[in-house]
Length: 85
Image (cartoon, rainbow, N blue to C red; front, top):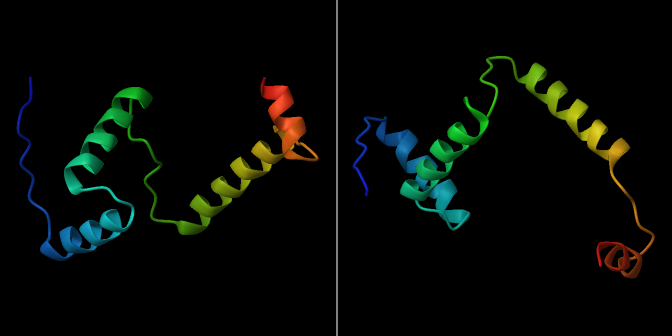
């Protein structure tokens, strides 16, 4: 069963978002559905709202460092595929 969601948004924001999403091959409706599903999965907003871009960049940098330190590395694709299989 489906329902309709109506929202009011600045026309410029809608146009810019539609252009960006279109470049990703996603329409506005799909993007909103993806967002709402992530809200459910994460039990909250799926990103950290902030007015301070430096804090956001620092958080991303920390997450990337952690991922790189804790990820498995391979010398070549064959070793990776052998490990997966």
